[in-house]
Length: 560
Image (cartoon, rainbow, N blue to C red):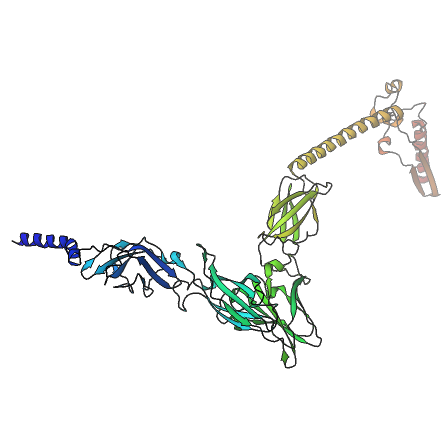
C-alpha cells in the first residue's frame, strides 16, 4: 500500500506541468529570452525579453550562485517582478572579482517555466564606468572643473581605483561651437579664456588598467566667465636648471609687486577630495620682489609636481597663475662622474664615483645611472666604447703602457634620453706583466754574463801588455849556476844598493863607543855569506880581522 501511494504521488508530481497549463487556459509558460546583465558603477540590472505577452499576471524571479558552491540563492530585488528588468544592486557581493551565475524563470500561480541560465561572469570585468559628476566655477579667464569620480561615495566597484581614473573633457565656446579635447585632473583649471563668455563641456572617466575601461560622457555643463580683474595673474611660467638649482621665471606687467610660489604633488591631484588644501609654500620663494625664484633641486628630488605663482600689492591679491608641471627627471641635469684608475698587473681597475660639490661633498643623485666609457691607448687615437657600472676591470692590456679613459653618466630610463657631459680624462700606466718580468730577468742575466766576459778579456789583455812591455826581472843562467843559495841570489837581484859603514868614536881614552850606521836594507839582504867576491863591492873579511886586531891592541894598551 505505501509503495502504491508513493507511485501515485510521483505520477501526479511528474504530470503536474502538463496538467496546469490546461487549467491555465491550455497554454504552456515559456522561459524568458535574451537575458542580459548590465553593471554600471555600483548599479546591477538584469534585463530580458518574454514572447508570451498575451498571458497576463505573469511574474519573474531570479536566483544566483557563487562559484565553487552548489546552492542557488534568491536574487534580492528580482523576485516576482512584473516588468522585464530588475535591479539587484542591493546584493552585497563580498568579492567583485569572484565568478557568479544567474538564472531566471516565468511564474503564474503554481505554474512555472523552465530556468534560463545566464553565462557566468565576473562583476568587475562586466562593469562599465558611468558618467562622473561635474561642478564648475568661473573666473575671469579660467574655469575650475570639479569632478567627482563615478560610483557612490562608498563604492565597492571602484573603491580601489578612484585614484586611477583618468578624466578627459570636450570643451567648446558656446557661441562659436569650436571644441577641443584634453585630459584634466579633478579641480584643474581651463585657462586662456575670454571674460564674460559662455563655455560648455562634458567629461568622462577611464581606467587604463587591464582590462581597459572607457566610461560614458556626462551631461553637458555650461558656465559664463566673470569680468576681467584689475590685477592680472602671473603668466608664462618657465622652469630652467642652473647647476644644482631650479630657476622658475614668469612674466608680469607691473613693477613693485610681491610674489609667492606654491607646489603640489601630482599624485595628490588624482584624489579629488580636498587637494586644494595640500598646496605648500616653497621656502625660498615667499615674498619675492623679482619675477623669478631660485630653489635647490633637492627640494624636488624625484617625481612630478605642479607649481603656481600669485602676485600681491598690499591688500590686493591676484588669482593664482596657470599651473606649471615640473617633472624632476625631465628637468634633472646629470652631472659628469669622477673617475679613478688603479693598475693591476696587465689590467686596470676603474672606479666611477658621483660628482662632488665645491665643498668636496658627494652629490646625491636620486635616479639610476649607467656610464658610457671611452677608453684608448695614449699613443693611439682609436677609442673603445662600452657601457659599465661603477666598478669594473679592463683586462689584457699591454704592460708598461699609458691608457686614458673618460666617461659620462646616462639615465637608465631611455624615455628621458638625458646624459651628462664627459668627465675629465684620466690616464694611468699599466704595470709590468709576467712576460715583461721574464724579459727583465733575461736582460739582467745577459748583462751580468757580458760583464764577466769583458772582465776576463780585459784581464788577459793586461797580462799580455805586462809580458811584452814590463817583463819580470830575472838573473841569467850563468850567474845562477854560481849562486845556488837563495840568500845570495836575492842579494844579486836586489834593486837597492846596500851600504854599511862602521865608525869608531873615541871621546876619551877610557871609553870607546862603537857606532854602526847601517842604511836601511831589506831584512832578507842582511844575511849573506862571508866569502869574498871580486864583484861584490863589500868589505872583505881581512879588513874585518884587522879591525878586530886593532881593537884588541887598544884594549890591551888601556889595561896597561
